[in-house]
Amino acid sequence: ELKVEQNPLFLSMQEGKNYTIYCNYSTTSDRLYWYRQDPGKSLESLFVLLSNGAVKQEGRLMASLDTKARLSTLHITAAVHDLSATYFCAVDGGATNKLIFGTGTLLAVQP
Amino acid sequence: DAGITQSPRHKVTETGTPVTLRCHQTENHRYMYWYRQDPGHGLRLIHYSYGVKDTDKGEVSDGYSVSRSKTEDFLLTLESATSSQTSVYFCAITPDRGLPHEQYFGPGTRLTVT
Image (tube, rainbow over all chains, first blue to last red; front, side, top):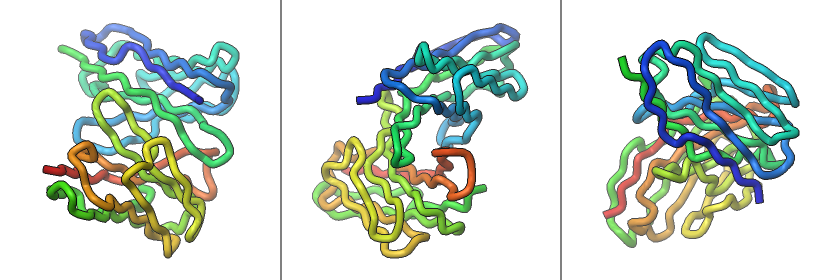
């Protein structure tokens, strides 16, 4: 059974600081997805990582995938308050287009 | 905008009553999904569909049924609502042409069972 773990579950950080969110998964997969959710809102796709070594960047966020280690990271550079949200990773669950989601990381960026 | 709507957006119902949630898409994509979101659990798949009348169970399907009689609509029914089904329900689609397995989500339905 595919399991996806994120850590930390909650991250309080100051503006201007850097930090990394980790996403580990339990079985082989070459595809990993990052989503953002603002409070009371739906999920918004951030990054799609489709192969080992894939790296995607947008603004202050950079995501990478190491399929051999079964690990993806979401790195936050010089955090700003607007990045406060819950971030989810999800792993391709197989042939039926299913995604298995992590429990999410609640990021709170303090001024 | 993936053209996904959900109705109702909020609902309060009593234990034991049947409830149907609707997901509607405008693009006629094959794959549609129903998730529930609860604190500490992330999103968990309830049921999914890969075409009209083609559906399958997800990891938390007990107490739920689905139907898809038209490509654009995917209905989730709680046969007899229980308090443990209080949750936020999200519908999602995978575009037929797009990045593999990427999903786009509807706005959600907040369901409270009293």
